[in-house]
Length: 63
Image 1 (tube, rainbow, N blue to C red):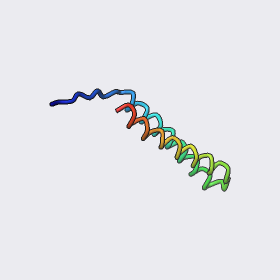
Image 2 (cartoon, helix red, strand yellow):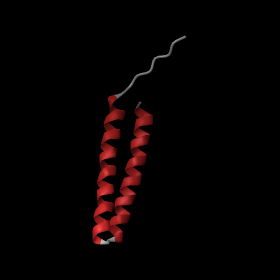
Image 3 (cartoon, rainbow, N blue to C red):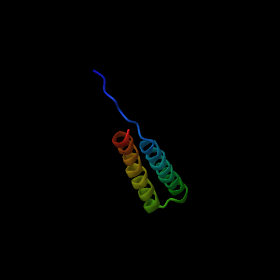
Image 4 (cartoon, rainbow, N blue to C red):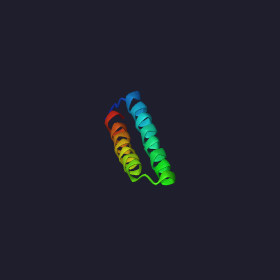
């Protein structure tokens, strides 16, 4: 008995998009390391964690 699965490009595209947002958050944290701005570091960390969670979720939902 065989099962058929369909793979969507939407999952791959959303994973790439959210991964890029994660990298932007990491760059924000890096910039905060040079300037000492804790609010920028917190915002970069929040963006990185949330975007990474969405990247994993998009991959599981649409793939």
